[in-house]
Each structure stands twice: as structure tokens, then as C-alpha cells.
Amino acid sequence: MKRFFASGITSILILSALWLFGFDTVLKKDVNHNTNLQKYVQTQRMILNNYVDYVNVDELFKDSLRGFVASLADSTYDVSGTPLDTTFTDVSVSDFREAAVRFERAYSYVMNNFPDEDFNALTESALRGMFTSLDPYTTYIDPSASDRVRDEFAGSFQGIGVQFDILNDTITVISAISGGPSDQLGIRSGDRIVTIDGETAVGFSQDDVVNTLRGPKGSVVQVGITRPNMRDPLTFNITRDDIPLFTVDTSYLLDEQTGYIKVNRFAATTYDEFMDAMNGLKELGMERLILDLRYNPGGYLDQAFRMAGEFFERGTQIVYTESRHNRFNQQYRTQTNGQFRDIPLIVMVNEGSASGSEIVAGAVQDNDRGLVVGRRTFGKGLVQQQYELADQSFIRVTISRYFTPSGRLIQKPYSEGREEYAFEVVRRDRDAATDVSNFIQDLPDSLIFRTASGRKVYGGGGIVPDHVLQSDTTRSYVLGFMRQHNVGFEFVRDFLDNYGDEFHAEWSDDFERFRSDFTWTDDQMDIFWSKMSDAGMVVSDTTATATYVDDIMYINPELIERDLWIPPAHTKAELTRQVWDTSKYFPVFNDAFDTALQEAILLWEEVSNLKAFSEQARRLED
Image (cartoon, rainbow, N blue to C red):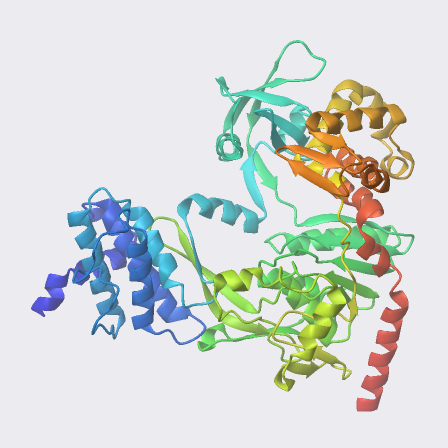
């Protein structure tokens, strides 16, 4: 008992309990250090109580201390024989209490011997070290990032409602978000924000802009704006409001009967956005749908489930989860008949499609509901839950694994470490068909499953598409250079500065005519190529391809000739984004550049064949 009380662990546990009930400020003498110790205790407890697999507390503690010591400013300090000794001679931590005691001793040792250390950073390093032996998705989110993460998944934030970029140290408005406070006041694309609340905003970083322009709903911020072709600056008093973060990038008709919807992630508003988009397309005559989930990293499982459910009959299994904790085991079956259960469906995926995207694609594939096309997906089959810590930071803990209806766990291996795990997609064969062939060839029988109609599907490394589509692997030095030096953006920006009124008068009320008929004049493209030269592009037949010397790119004229079509198409899409919004940008961009989508449009016969095969298999089973 003396050793127990002398260790100080009692105070940690009491403070943790008080924090849970909201009384932590009563007894804290040193808020910073107590908070750090609380965070350690909370993190360890939440992992031990909730993690999907059994966790070895000894390994958890030792990994955390290694992370703690590795972040000490003096990396040469001899920690042998101190509470910081990471050789762990004859050390075996048996329970949560002992781990917390040992960490407090190490923390106190540093306090007494190195009082100038950054203890917040040391504690965060200890927490991140604690996750070393766990999966890649059990992670720490520091307080500065927690608000942004919450906003992203809540589907909205509070601010003035502009998309912006920093050009020549000046905040330049790309577009005012439709219906937001700035849009209602008449702030428009091309405006330069030069002051905020009477102070200069020139030289602001991206973070500076976000920190000053975002704020609580109802608060007012004053911005000073210079506008092209206007001599005097303008002043706007903007009342901040809720600004939506849309997860449906765009929805439109590819032809008279084919709808297209692109979903960029699954946040709190995704299902509602998706239903609005679907109903809008139905009113326009949509009879079949391409659902684009490429580069969609996932998000809220319930939103993916609800969206997928609209394509199925009542009682269809979409996904299920399993954990060592029964409270996290769940079955996700549709409760009603989906509104779009009869519509022909193609789902597009690639290596950037993960988690929620794989849940949707897996349900569609396993139930033979539609055709999954594209490239093998990322391979994330783990579910996380988020827990708040004492200082409003968070940890995400993997609580369960999810399985597709056929029983597939599509999680790819992560035993070789987080870095190898993250870069696995980069190391896949660039040829999508070869990647799929190699993956299936090395797959054990235990990871081969069957769909409802008996088709083979595969687990252990993402969703393998029914029809492989190659990515556009064309390498354009011209496009790379113009992006690197922001030439396309500045070309469009200058065009609108000089001719914006004339452009709006002719085109802004007729987007479809713009999409089909607008082209740049030869004189305008001469200006573009002049900007490319000013940025450092030199046409030279002395190089076979393109060569960089410092910031100068020497490029063969044959490459220029080959890629002449790219700048007009790319800058037209950029013009669309700056005049309209992102939802209009994608149709123009896809028209010119999305070769996979153009191929997917041709696959409706395969969709019909799959439906016939599935119905025949069902009849034979009956």
C-alpha cells in the first residue's frame, strides 16, 4: 500500500476520474503536466478496453516509452539505469496500473532533470509510440487538427464561404461558395483580400487565412478587397455562417439516359446529398447510373451503408463487423426497399478508394447488383471509433473488422509497418490488369469467395473490379510544368480580370453551350504560351524529351506538338471552376481527360449480362 500511494498513480487515477465528471480544474496545480499524464492514462485505457484484438500491455508500455525517449532534445543522454532506460532489463509490465506508474516515473524524471523540454510534444510522442505495434489506423489527432477533422466529417464549418489561393503573397478568391455569406454580399472570383479587420493580410499563409476568416456563426469579420478594373478598394463586413462542405462533387447526365455522380468521401451529409443528386437526375430522365468512388477514402460507415442500401431490396446484407468485444459486432441489413433497386449500376473504383467506398463496392459486387469497374482498391477493412482526451485532442481506435456479404475481409496486410503499408499502392504494377493478375496468382484459397450467383471474388487486398480499366498513364511535361508553376490558373485569372464582364455576358447563363462550344482564340493561347516561357519553359531540339536545369525546363518541340491539346482543355476546366464551381468543373474536365469514364460508358452490355446471369443462378437455386 505504501508503494502504491508513494508512486503517485492514485493522483493520476483520481484526476482521470474527476476529468470524466468535469471536476478536473479543482485539484490541478500544474494543468499542463497533469493533462499530459491524464492523456497517457486515458489513451492506454481506451486501447485496452476497446481495441479489436487482444493487446499486450507490456508491449504497449515499452513502445510508448521508446517514443517518449526518442523525442528528447538531447539524443546523446545516457538513460541507462534511469526510469528512461529502454533496454527494459528484467522489466515486464503486467497490468494497466503498473504501466501508468512507470510512465509517471519517467515523466517526473525528465521534469526534474530537463525542465526545458517540450512536455506536450514528449507526451504526444509517447502516445504515437504506443500505437507502433497496432494497426495503421489507431492514431492520435492533436488539438490543432481536431477542429478541422470534426468539420470535415460533420460536413460543414463556420466562416465567410470562399475558396481561395495565395498568389504573389495575396489572398485571391477562386470562388464564393454558392449561398454563403460572401456570395450574398457580391464577393466574386478574382477579388484580392488585402486586409482583415483593418490589418494587412498580405503575406498570409494558408493556415493564417483559415485561422482569421473562420469563426463562430454570427460573428463579423471585416475584409478589404481590391477588384480588377476598380481603382478604389472595397470593404465588406461579413457575418460568418455555416458553410457546407459538399461530399458529392458533381452530378450530371453523361447522355440522355446515363447519370453520373461523384462522391469524394462519406461525411455526415453524404446520404442526403446523394439522394438530392439522384432525385435531380431522375427528373432529368436518368435510367442508369455510374457511381464514381475513385479516390474516395471512406469516412462514416453508416453513411456508406445508407447510400448502398438504396440500390437493394429490403433484408439485403450490405456489410457486417466483428470484434473481440460483442458490443462492436453488428449486422448491416437494409430495412426498406431501396428507391433505386432496379436501376442499372456501374461503380467506379481505384487504388484511392478505401473503407466506405469498399463497403459500397463490395456490397454491389457480392450481391451481383451491378458492375464494379476500374482498378484494385486500397484495402482497408478496419473500423475506428474516436475518443476525446483531456485537452480536446483525440485518438482513433480500431474497434472491429468489417466483412463484405460473401465473408471477405478486404483489409490488406500491415505487419511490415506503417510506412510499407501506406506505400504499398505505389509499388503495385502500373498496369492495372497485371496488378490484378499478380494479386490473384499469389492468393491462397482461403481468400477466394463467391458472390450470390457463384462468381469468384477475392479478399485480403481490396476489391478486385469485375472489369479492369487502365488509368491514363500519359506523361505530359507540359501539363506538369504548367501545374508546377501555376501557369494555367494565372492565365485564367488574368483573362477574367481583363475580359470577365464580356465573358459573363456571353456565357455565364448558358453552361451547356459553354461546355460544348467555348474555345480559346489563337491570340489567347499565344498569351498562355508566353506565360509558359516567362515561367521558365524553353523549347529546344537539343534535348530528346525534357530536361530541368535549376528552374528552367528545356523541352523538345515534338513534345509540345504532341501535347498542344492539353493546355486549352485544362485551362477551360479551370475557367469553369473559377466562373461557376467545382460541380461544373468536373463535366468539362471529364470530357477531355477522363478516359476511364469514357470507357465505362461503353460497358452497359456487361451490366445486362451480369443481371441475366444472376437471375438465372437465382432461378436454379430456387
